[in-house]
Amino acid sequence: MGEPLYRVDELRALEQAAQATLAPGTLMQRAGVAAATLLARRLPQGRGRVRVICGPGNNGGDGYVCALELMRRGVDVQCIALGAATAEDARDAFARWAGAGGVTLTSLAVDDGCDAVIDAMFGIGMTRPLGGSYLAATDWINRQRAAVLALDVPSGLDADRGCWVGDVPGVRAAATVTFIGGKPGLFTGEGCEAAGRVDIEPIGVAAGPCSGVLATPADFAELLVRRSRNTHKGSFGSVAIVGGNVGMVGAPLLAARAALRLGAGRVYVDCVGAPELRLDPLQPELMFRPAAGLDALASCVVGCGLGEDATARSALASALDRRCPLVIDADALNLLAADEALAAACVGRTAETVLTPHPLEAARLLRTGPADVQRDRVAHALELARRFAALVVLKGAGSVVAGADGRFAINPTGSPALATAGTGDVLAGMIGALLCQCDDARQAVYAAVWLHGAAADAFGADLGLVAGDIAPMAARRLAELRDLR
Image 1 (tube, helix red, strand yellow):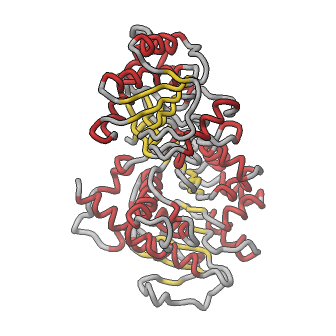
Image 2 (tube, one colour; image 1 turned 90 degrees about the vertical axis):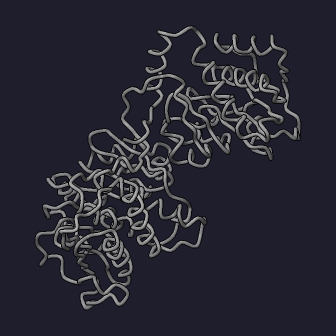
Image 3 (cartoon, helix red, strand yellow; image 1 turned 180 degrees about the vertical axis):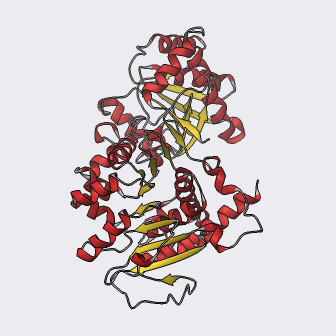
C-alpha cells in the first residue's frame, strides 16, 4: 500500500503511545538528529553555515537538537530564538544546546550569507495565523538565497488541510523532513509548493491506523500484471464516451483517444451535438455510435464537452441508468449540481460511480465556493464521496481520490504542465479505460490519476504539454511499471 498519511489527531495518538514507553525527550532527540543527518548530506562537503529559526514549542526543540548535532559534526550553526522555549522538552533541548556552547541570537541579519536555513518555528499544532516576529521571520526566510529545510511542516501550513492557517502565507521550503509519518497537508493544495521535497522519518514510531495514503503504484497492483498472450479485444472491455455538444467535439475525442491508448478493447464515441461525425481521421480505430444503441459496455464516460442543454441532460440521465461503472466529468457535474433529480439518480446507482471535479465544479456540487474547497481539499472530497455514494477525484495540485467509506489517497505525481485545456478530458478517458480492465474500481482510479500525473512529470517542463500528448506517455509509463515486475 501507499505511504500512510496521518491527520494531527492520529499523530497525537501515535506520539502518546510511543512516549509512554520512552524516556522524556526521546522523540525530539530522534527528530533533531534525523534532520541534522539529512541536512549534513546536502551541505557542501558536509559543512557550511546554517541558521536555525526556533519557535517556543516542540518544533523549536527539534531545532535546538538539530543544531547541536550539526555543531558536533563541524557545521557552523547558530540558532535564532523567537521567544523563550515554553514546552518542557524544548527547554531541556535548549539547555543542552546552550550548555554545549551553542550561539543563540534574538534577531535576524539582513543578509546572513548562510548555506542553509532550518525552519523550526511551528509544527503540526499551529492553529493561529503567523504574526509579529514570526511573520517577519517568515519573510526573512523566504528572501534567503540559501536552501530552506522545514522541520515536520513548513511554519504556517495546516498539516491536515494543505492551506495556510488563517490565509496568511508562511514558509516556502526547498525540502521538508517530516516525522513519524506523512501529513496530508504536505502533499495537496499550498503544501505541494510550500513543502518542496518531502522526506519521511519514522523516528522509531510504529505505523498506526490512518484513513489516508500517498498513492504509489503498489496501490494499483492489479493493473501491473502483464496481459496474457491468449487474449483479444473483447477481453479488455468496451467503453463509451458521451459528450461533444455543438462546437465541443474535441473534448470527447481527447477522452476517447486516451481510452484507446490505455488499453480499452473497443472505444465508442457519441457526440450529441454532431451526430453526423462518423470518423476521427487521427484515430480511425474509434467507432461513432449513439450511446442509446450500445449494450454490454464495461464502462461509460459522460460529460466531456457535453453542454448543459436539454440534449445534454437527456444524455446524462440515460448514462445514469446504465448498470456499468460510470465516470461523470465536466458539464455532467454541473448538470448534477443544478438538477436534484439527476443527483438523486446518481446517488441511487448500484454500479460504481466516479466523479472527477475540479475545485469550482466541486464547489457547485457542495453549494459552497472554490476557495472553501481549496482550504480543505481532503474533507470536501470525502464529503462529495459521501453525498453521491461515489469515488471522487478532486483534481488539482495533489489530486485527492476519496471514497464513500471515508478512505482517501493523495496523488503525488503531476506538474503545472497539466494546467491546459483538455487534460481533464484525457483523465476521464483514462479512468474509463482502466475501469474496463480492473475489477477494483479504486485501483483503476488510482492508476489513471497517478499515470496522468507521471506523464506530465516525464515531460519535464512546466508548460508546452498539450492534452493529446498525455495518454501515449502514460501508456509507456504503465508498460515500464509492468516490466519491473
